[in-house]
Length: 163
Image (tube, rainbow, N blue to C red):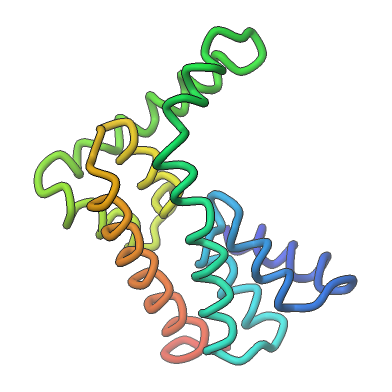
């Protein structure tokens, strides 16, 4: 993930403002606010500005995933082009859902908040939607998880292990 975030920072950072690069990276699955904070730090942005932009960018896709992903998947499944991909995404998400079944709220918050590969707001929202977790509960847990991930990565990038 770090190398992808660094590539975005180095490549896009030459052509567009650091704030926009940070925002774009934060919107993307896998990278999310974690990648946005790494890019913001790489491009010399101040901590507060980086975190605010990264968190906003990470939050924007969440309601769309929670509200529409099941309908989108149902629409794409019968197609030859996307059918396999959708089935793989569902299968992968459901494998990760075991940790969430007990203590949905805390499990989802930790799943989104602990910055490990394959976790984050995109995957957490996908799992919450597929499991049918109440949208208000899933939204709050995801927001808390994003705040947790942003705090951890900010400490690593700007504080404890700053470079």
